[in-house]
Image 1 (cartoon, rainbow, N blue to C red):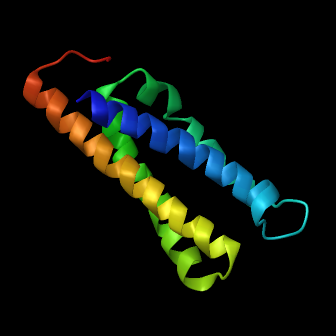
Image 2: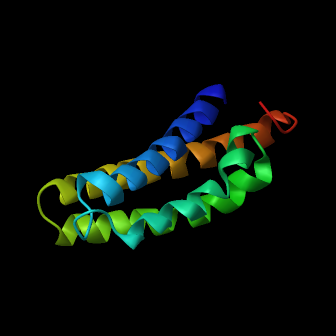
Image 3: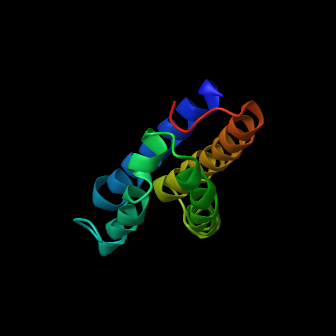
Length: 117
């Protein structure tokens, strides 16, 4: 259960860092950065609940992170170069976040462990 907790934390923080770096410096849609960097803001909503191990946050975040998976697949399919590689990294991080959150919820529920890790 601890591995799922830490994997979820690392993937969420990695996804936040990736989205910021991608849209501000690495491969923005427009030179100098783009407004697409605002896609990071929804990732900040579940951040504290995930870091505190709140079961409810893990549950709704699994549906929420699918939007980032879809964006990564679409941009990985359509973009080229560095942007395509960053999109594939977004897919990997969102899949890791999704799977680890599901495992955390299932194992916590099965163990009867109280919320918080």
